[in-house]
Image (cartoon, rainbow, N blue to C red):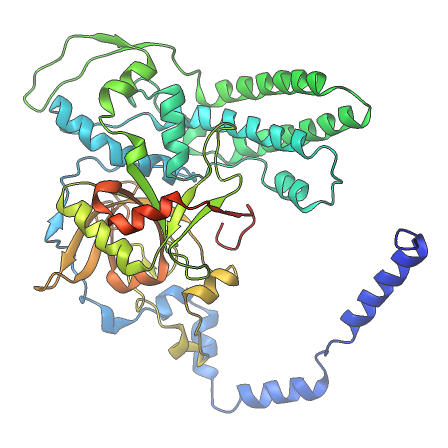
Length: 459
């Protein structure tokens, strides 16, 4: 066998280098053509304009001005826009926003908010454990292994999905926002995340070193527990320590003040969340994969013992059909999308015709949704609660209302209005209660899920 010899390796590297070098370089003939093409018409005015202005202001499609209003035939009664500040916790805010409306009704409150900081504390500790367990599981693989490399590049973050919120609620419970309010670092997670990532990468190499030194798995896991204790300490310094029990009272819409009552977080969760999370079905529109199939994303969870994001992939017309049923029944939904595409932040509008780059540059931009996914141009980046729909007289949806978590000053009084076409192009995930989903679609849940790698194009 010569495959593992230095000579074979050197020859392989040389072959790859030669193949790469055989590619076409930019030569003077090309450059001359580029200049001729560029000067085929006088672009002096455009060059002057573009080099001195914000590009977004130059590509606004004025023909769309005033074409989209913020009125909805079906709109849920939402009170109190939340604010995730400079974080990626949209998934947590959105999930808890979907749940909190039931608390308002149950206690006759004008508004209510669960503590995102409380749930976020446990999310970060659990993700740290999941990462270190991933390192232990791959301890025999080289650092160049793709899964090891993915783990080290994706140690921990503040992003997530619906099923991460539900897993945390079932394990740790929930508390009101006033019991564990936001801190500077819960609203600005960047510095804390960098510190934890640095520590976890150091810990990862230590655990791998213990394995190389012949230490037992029991010893390695014992050291992992000590490492998690350090992470817990860091989290307390940044976010505060979660309460084991708390006393809470409230004032209802009629001005009546309740008697103080003491709960544990799990008791509060069980009393205020009057739904079974098993009734919520995760759906997706990903045209790069086969429809009417069940998929699971490896490592798309925060609890070691938790469930990965597992979803039914469906055409968009079915997602919208089920979403409309849910809204007509007064049920908000978790929805995620590629929010940065064609977004008018000031007006709070998501419209595929909002910006016209082609007319400005004279260059076509023609990828469809599938192509954008496969080339990493587009993917699910932000979660919001779907709380309204507007339709034509025959019931066809024309636009949808999203309760955002960027504060009341963002968008249209804290909301975003997306056109039905934008839903098609940039909407991805939707969580709907099973009672609003067709029976033949629910049967897909019986399939064995297709396992997707954590570095899949969509995720």
